Length: 67
Image (tube, rainbow, N blue to C red; front, side, top):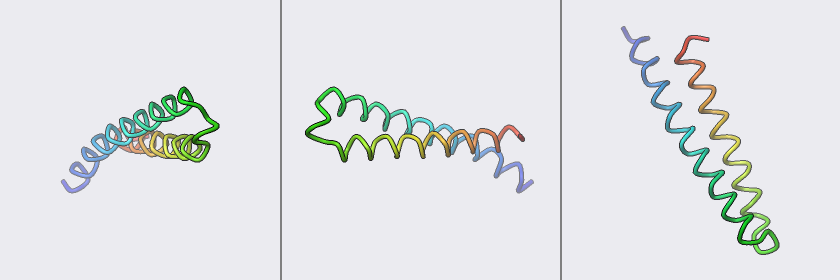
């Protein structure tokens, strides 16, 4: 029974992390459009953060589907 509860929370974590990753990549697009010469650090931070969040989202999705 405890395993069922954990597997159902994996899908919730998956959705949260994928949404956060997409928001971070949206932030990346905004900063690239605004000009990289003003915010190189923010562009790099958004890219790294987006990759980590989407990676965690895919990881939790695979755990929830039993792969």
